[in-house]
Image (cartoon, rainbow, N blue to C red; front, side, top):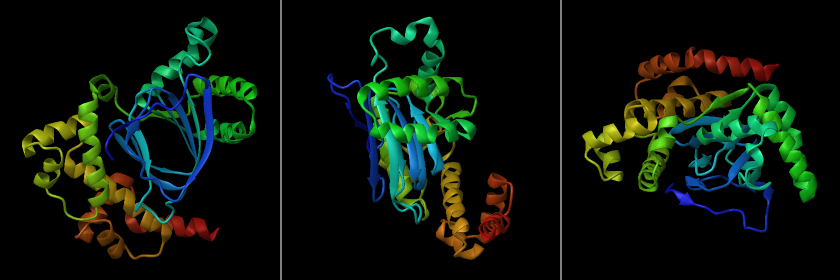
Length: 287
């Protein structure tokens, strides 16, 4: 997942709207100068944004600021790898230099600033905008621009949002560090189910173990051990939701060799035991 620099929009295009479907998503950790709104309609997996790695599932509505490294990763993480999404991409000045600096658009300007950390929208905001964003794929350019301006306005007024990446990550970001970190992300995502040693992962970043520990904590705000546990518990949740495995098997499949330790860590992170978590989904499906 090396960092990949894109330039999406040609000078002749004001905005790009597209609906996409993939068998799975392992697109590189990438950045581009355009702002981006992504509506995930189908799939589950990992959302990697700056120094944040979180789970996503449909329906998922995010906005990413310019030059913010990000990707959605589904390959090998669930039974629902296939992804369907609507993507909107535009430059900050797509309506002309200084357009959003004007007083009536102050809130949208603030939205752009918040999006430098990556934003996930939830609640009524996501519900209200899902069909509107989907509808853009069938509209002409004039209608698209009018509707996009209104969508940005509604997003700017929403309180149903969470910021993903830390401000420190954005301030300290440079291409070489992002490229190195993306290789580490890729290696961990592909190998998190087995035992990984500090020396092994540090070698991917070409750092000594002690230097890697400082480097990794700076980017993720977690130790390698904490990061691995988060990934494994997230994967275990997907297996438990499927209700096709017992707790011991889920523990092993997720990379935990000790069921008691798995139960303890799961309770700490999710607030319930794996059995209680699984029972919740069994009950919900029954109704």
